[in-house]
Amino acid sequence: MKNYFFTSESVTEGHPDKLCDYISDNILDECLKQDENSRVAVETFASKNKITIAGQITTKAQINVEEITRNVIKEIGYDNEQTDIDYRTCKIDINITKQSPDIAMGVDIGGAGDQGIMFGYASDETENYMPFAINLAHKLAERLTQVRKNNEIPYLRPDGKTQVTVEYENDRPKRVETVLISNQHLESANIEQMKQDIIEKVVKTVIPKQYMDENTKIYVNPTGRFVIGGPLGDTGLTGRKIIVDTYGGYSRNGGGAFSGKDASKVDRSASYMLRHIAKNIVANGLAQKCEIQISYAIGMEEPLSLYIDTFGTSKIPEQEIINLVKHKFDLSPNGIIKYLQLKQPIYSKTTNYGHFGKEEMPWEKIVEL
Image 1 (cartoon, rainbow, N blue to C red):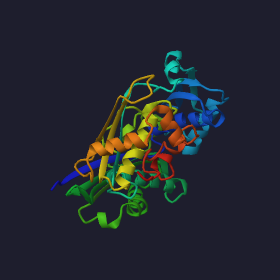
Image 2 (image 1 turned 90 degrees about the vertical axis):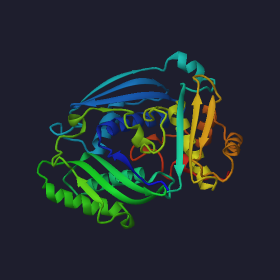
Image 3 (image 1 turned 180 degrees about the vertical axis):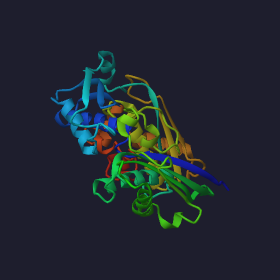
């Protein structure tokens, strides 16, 4: 018997940190469209009507970083520097150099682009093998964007956050205890109408009825007002939402961010591979939940360590699972890139609403072990 409450959060595509992630990933994709061997490590910083982009890019691609950036801000829906940021008037500073030859020396021969530890996780508590709370939080955040862009709730602005608390009974999701939503809105919006609209058109369309009861609490914009948002309300930075990007805190995290990095950076590629392996361990019935850790040294091909924990749910000894993984999968950086086809310009699709649990992504494919 293990009963507890667990909470995860997500954010909309207009959150300042996600704005920065999306700019960085769009720059990466534009490089890969023209040169699949591009090396990219780009950071974006957003502040009052200003975007700063810095990092290292080594590529044959000819890209217009400023144009990419303005198009991303426009796509998200930011067009007012008085309340958030304006894609037409914001200042854009660019400081991009080439990849350090010291790093390139190791990567060119197939080694890892950096040292580090990465984790992957999967559980059978949802259809897409993601933890229940983060799965719902992502769906709520995505729904907030949908109702804004299709004018179901036309007075919403791009910035927003969601949070879901789930009650577990016997280590399985039993009910939703709390739903918290904060979303930017026009100053002219009626606050009470907004709360009603979000509950009816967002919360009740996302949270399954069987998980809500008379004790479920729903909070919408607890401060009562959220007009100033985006980079004007809070600065944004690439890589600051790693818990949102992964498993909502339900699994451990290696600490390395994803967005703006090409696949030679194992922070990103190895995390995708470990999600693939963990998901397939669960999907193939070897365990009900699985967490995997791997570690790398810069410039070295083979991982330094591999660790698997099935939390007592495995059907076979964990050492047998480790042996199966080592036999089935090439965990070198080049092996991962080739297996998951990570030189494709797919990364802007990963930026928002979690990098995992999206069935169209190659690391989500179920294979036979």
